[in-house]
Length: 617
Picture 1 (cartoon, rainbow, N blue to C red):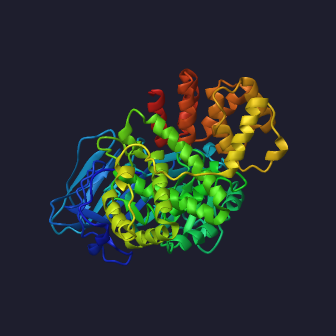
Picture 2 (picture 1 turned 90 degrees about the horizontal axis):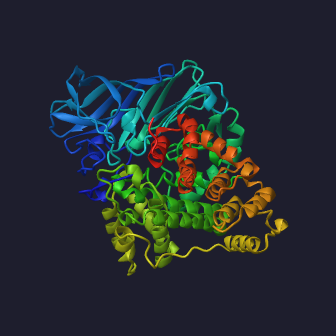
Picture 3 (picture 1 turned 60 degrees about the vertical axis):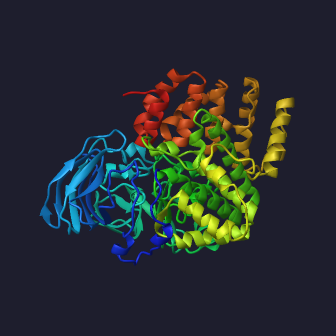
């Protein structure tokens, strides 16, 4: 997820394919970016061979990271490392000296390794520690089946360095192999070619032949099973979840086919999804070949599977063509939201896609309001020097980025827009790019080519949303708003007329409950529609937010909110509710819940809520 600087080369010079020799892949100039200590213009890694042991008793990963490197005559190579115990380093088979620089709370330490000008390979022997931020070790009670422990990693944006010493910049793409040893009753899977059944000895071998950015290296270990959907799609989950997950994601092959029909071949061979325990901090993470997903999307009716479409779209925007630094994060996410909506429209119709887009538009309005005192943060192109890349992972990148592309589509026409995007993905495949290179490509291959004038610079480099923004409409949402208004005016609601509402319509209904609603009206809605006890996590989240903001305590909602916050670790949901507590001057109440919930949260979620509530251990 994000950051700084202007690439000194054209992304077009970086055209590559997986079979291209490593020397050719890396003959490029890299920018200095503030979120990595690496100096890739001097010496850069090109391939990782990881050999590690996963120890659930000590909660430590130990082993070796062996790198092929391209050395431009440098006497040292610099890797990123944070909270790692570096045991020894070799260069071309001989022990060499190394130095860990000063610790920075955000960036960690530079690992400076002495090499010769013709060094081709380095080997780092290391252990993770109890401070490693990318890893979440779960005991059996924190899983669905409650029989065995679980481990998963989360590397985006700059956390891969906390479990592998690496040049942790998105502009540095590498291939990798891995040998992973785990307890024999568990299975290991990675963002690579994966097993479909458990081995007898707990040893797993992986290969990622396409070059990827380090934040996309991912590992999960647990008592999981695989169930195929098609020859190239399938799901992993714990035994008690596998049937539900398989049913929920049964349209995955249709999604891949729809995506290919829009923007070209799927270049990663396999598209699988693993549903992790509920502490996973995101809705999904687009790790190549194996998307990591939260169980909160398992609603039983496929109503929240736009998340799968989103992560699939990342196989083109993000994984295939990657933001070179985190300042250009919108290139990953704005494009992906646009692509996601096109997939959803192709499969489920324009009305559903527009409902999803309108919810995103409302999210954008809320984000713009929250950032009104820091307007520079509402630009698509950011300057995050000295800041955590996570600061740019918000609705601006996702929903303003989407709105820019949708407005562009409505200006030039869908046919021309699709041809442009298809060529953009093809020409920049397996490379990284930045905003300036994209704008240049846009001008040459779409706007000037079709004699179209468009306020690109205003959209990208100025705060807020330009006046020429596309207007998204939904007839279904108009009906929802009329129904809500009638209820507010009369305290009556025609239940029979809304029995076929989709979850998106219910979310829109709840989110638009006005500030002047009474406690009695909240109680009436809850009694009729059972919002407090809904099994749809998205509806639950927006209802709980309203309950906190309006001091509604009916139907045991407070205990339900606490249960939600202590079992769900998805950062968006958790942060929304704790923000509501803070807004309602109920921080003391929130802290009581948070102290119970925090041990279940990944560090990504915990660090966000620590800052929000001013919590210190």
